[in-house]
Length: 446
Image 1: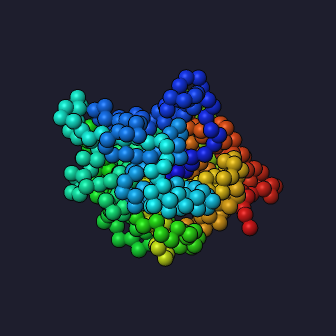
Image 2: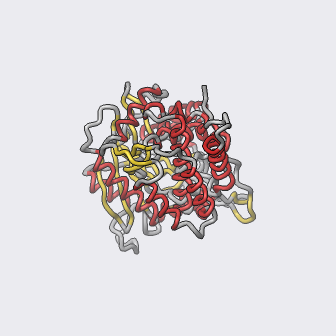
Image 3: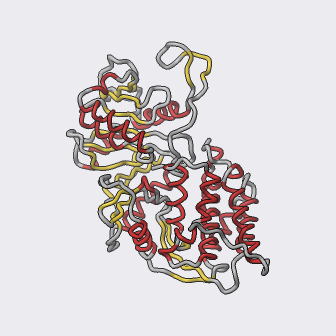
C-alpha cells in the first residue's frame, strides 16, 4: 500500500531532540510516526487504557521496528498472528528487506517477539471509561463480523491521505481481512469511495482480475470503517506484461469505453475545473499552464478513448494467480479517464519505489517508454506521450487537492520533481508539433 499515495518507509533516521525519551533514558528521537501512533491508539481504544509498562495487564503489542519510529503494532499473542503480520508487512519493500522480514516472522512463531523491548498494552475496558463510545475498535469489528478478531495496526509516514489500517486475524493466526479507518475528512472520503467501488465491482464478470469482497462498510465513533477480504499474496512474482495489460484493459472496459476528441471531452472539463480550484495553491498555476500547453501539442483530429482505472495500481497492490491479477486498494477507482493511466502509474511507481530510482529520472524514463507501456491499449506513439503527460497532470492535481505538502509528505512539493519533468515532456511535444523540419519526436525505448 505504498507509492505516490502511500510512500515507502525509508529515509534518514530522525535527528535527536532534547528532553526525556519515552522510556525515560537519554534524549528522545522525535519522529512524527510515533506521535501519530499514540494518537491513533487513543482513538481506537478510548478511555485511558494504554500503557507501555512491561507488567501491564491486557492485550500486548510489540512495536516494529522500534518504539521511536514504529511502522507496525504487532500482537504478541497468539504467536502465529505475530508471525503472519511480519510475514506480510511491507509488500513494497525490496527483496533483501522482504527476506529479513521472513526471518523475523519465523522468529516470532517461536516466541522471539516477546524479546522486543518496545511494547504497548491495551487494558481491558473498565465499567466507566469516560467515553461516549461503547467498547473499542476490536469490540466493534468482532461484533459486526460475527467472530473474535486479533488485530495488528500499521502506520505510515506523514501524508494527507494516511489512515490507520488494521490487519485482521483469527486466533489461529490466519489473516482474513483488512480494515481501513477514515479519521480525517479526506481519509473518510477515500474509505467511503473504496466501499462504493468494491460494491460496484462485485457485480463485474471479470476473468483477468480478482477484487476483494467487501465484508463490512459502516461508521464507528464518527470514523468511516471499511473491511475487505484479504486476497492471497502468493505468486507475487512479476506478472507477464501481456497478462498485466490484458487485466488493465478489462478493468478499463468495466463500464464500457467511449471515444472523444483528445482536446474536448468530459475528462478535460473535470480536470480544468479541479485546476481552477487550485489557483491559490503553490503549484496550481504551474499545473494549469502545463495543462493548456499539453492540449496545444495535440495534433488536429486526434481522439482518445476513455474508461475506468484503479487509480493506484502498483506492483505491491496486487498479487498474481496464473494470468489473473488479484488487486486491492480501490479507494481511487474512477471512470471516464484516458485509457492507459493504470499502466503508466504502475510503470512509474515500480521505478520509484521498487527500483529506488530518483523520481525525476523515473519520470523521464516513463515518458521515454510510453509507447511500449501503452501498447496493450492500441495508442499511437504521439498520443501515448500525451496520455502520459495527462497522467502526470492528474497526479499533480491529486497531490495539490489532498494537501500533501501541508501534511509533510516528502514529495509534496511538486516543483522539486514532477513539474520540471512535466515541463520537459511538454517541450518535447512542442518541438515535434510546431517545427515541421524537426526530427524530434516523443522519445521511445527500444
